[in-house]
Amino acid sequence: MGGLRLTDDQRLSWLRLMRSESIGPRSFRSLLSRYGSADAALAALPEIARRRGRPLRIATLAEVEREMASARRLGVRFLALGEAEYPTLLREIDSAPPLIAVRGEGAALGRPMVAIVGSRNASAAGLKFTERLAAGLGKAGFVVVSGLARGIDTRAHVASLASGTVAVLAGGHDRIYPAENEGLLARILSFGAVLSEMPMGYEPRGRDFPRRNRIVSGLCFGVVVVEAARRSGSLITARFAAEQGREVFAVPGSPLDPRAEGTNDLIRDGATLCADPDHVVSALAPLIGQAPPPTGAWNEHPVDRGGEPLWDELEGLDVAPPPAMPIPPAYAAGETDPDLGPEGAPEGLSSSGPLAEGHSPHGRHLLALLGPQPLPLDDLSRASGLAAREIQRAIVELELGGYVQRHANNSVSLK
Image (tube, rainbow, N blue to C red):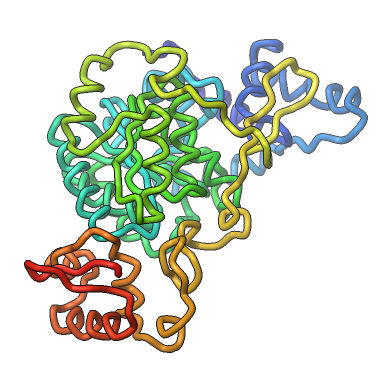
């Protein structure tokens, strides 16, 4: 438990320092350690900027007071690193946010947590397993953490509403992404918590999603990756987890499905195979109440450090530079579905030919849900939300296009 308790004025000063230019989580800690308080650090910033030879924008008191007022209107409160309510495991990582903005049931942040992440363009089989996994982890007493994205994230949150779930945002609390999940976020607030380190009113950009991912993994004892292409942002979460000493689990998939390439690679590199909720529960149960090791069980392979820094840190403070990772191209381009290929097809599937020439939206939707493994039409109907008649009509359309094939027991797969 933390022994710190900030006053309202101190919380404003912390937020003002945190929102100042180039003050990342490591710079914040260094300045606080060197000067003793956020106020003293703020007073020292102009001289630090003068020595650097270029101006440094310092957040004004009026700006952070406006942010605090906006936060209060939404029911958002700020928890400081070191305060008792701040999540225990998150405070142990070297890039822990000095302040996190939290809505909802704070008690969820004090329970053991496991992250479930994966493809935004998930298959129906992946969604079904995610539901089973999240429900099983909740039944075992774990809170499920994810990033509120489409696909696997969304299904993980929905399946763990009753048992407790935490959503970590890449933007501000009033800039929900994707917007279609605003209703889900409202449901999460009744059963769990939503948190962010970003300012109110902030629209997430490319590097903010992998930046968010370090918090997803940092909150948890372990991270489970369900379906991820080789360029998926979910693999960044797995890398952060390994560096933070968390356990990394991966759900195996067909070698013919591009959505399984990333997870199969993780298993090959040493991640723990997950084919049942008990595989996660049995591995993590002995760790509860203990500090994680310096590195996780899966940390054999070097992390690619090329690419854009995920945040800024003030130079000259003798702090480690921020992590630099290759940003998935679709994140960098601001696309809404980084794991989608052209025309909404799973990465690795072409959208040329008949599918791109006027097939129905239902056909496109089903194509995205199917994989090489035969799937019962009942499961496909549940995953797609389409009626049986619509399913049958779209399957005939895809059969004629040479995209799918039928199997025994009323099931279908990609051809």
